[in-house]
Amino acid sequence: MKIAIIGAGLAGLSCALTLEKNGQKADIFEQRKEIGLGYDIAELMTPILHAPIEDAVKFFSETYDIHLKPASNVQKIYVHSENESAYVEGKIGFSNMRGKYKESYEKQLADQLEHSKIHYDSHATYETISKEYPHVVVATGDPRDTQEIQPFDVAFPSAFAGAIVKGDFVRTEVHTWFNNNLAPKGMGYLIPHSTTEATLVSVYPQYKDEWLQKRGEFWDALVKDASRILKQEIEITQSFTIDDYMIGKCRYPRIGNTFFAGNCVGAITPFLGFGQTGSILSGIYAAQDMCGLGDYETLCKPLLKDYDHSLVLRRTIEKLDNHQLDLVTKSLHNSVVRKVVTQPNMGVLKGLSYLLKPFTSK
Image (cartoon, rainbow, N blue to C red; front, side, top):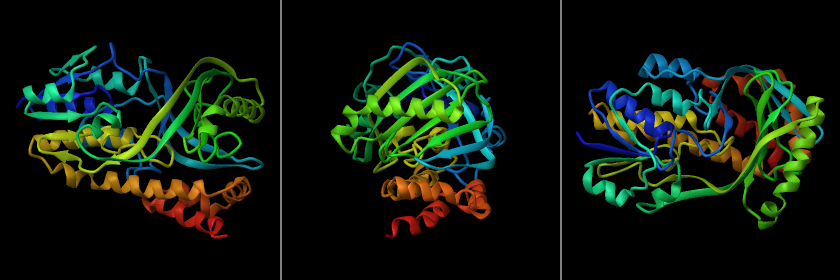
């Protein structure tokens, strides 16, 4: 079977790995000159987004023979609003690296390949590749590539400001900010890579041109608040900005023998904006379909359902002003609420949406 994968990200590489484990191989076309995103960043892989997978690292290892080494496990996540702070504790998930880091998930996946070839610095288009390869997986991470072939329903475009920062951090603790003065209708987060380095990011939807113009002001305010809360001066060592990062999902996961995976299918959950678990699963599912081990559209249904629940939750949070966000944050001191947030088998996305209803009813 002749298979082409466009994109050497999490979805494309996990697809190639699964193909190899079933006696197939693929040609992988990557437009960059090396594995990894064009910027360095830490992300959070959490069961909150993909119940009932409680431990994604264990799940991928034991179920699919795909092995990942996270940067750290996360045991506590702090939530900061304008005037309140709270935290939840438990098996929150794992932090992982993306980008040029040696231990990035992309590089870990690429190191496990044995037969599939990665063609770097390749700018071949879907149109040209599909003429040579009967089976094509579109996994570029850019929904605009999906839109050239079929409808991609965009929930919202996002604006990012982020940086690698130095300081004194607890590796197992993540900090999040829900404060419209720092990220309107969005969030900020700090994820440690080590005890001395972390990723700090502000991300929010581009609903107003004014918000994009004020991105620098929002970013400075987040850095100032992070320094205050962590009781130290945050030192920025490497920064980046991203505009028009589209969050959404495609209309059809498969058209003929073309499969859409990763962010090209809708693997990024709108609530927190992370998509590692969904991207890897979509790559695995595409490979399983090509190997006669399942139907891709059927396998993707739980992923797209997670996307829908996550979008409902995001729309709910977007309705909250800073006073309401303070009330939600304060509610996390309640032991019942904390249990709902940290128990993946309880359907956390649905549970959170239900808990937020009283704050949006007025």
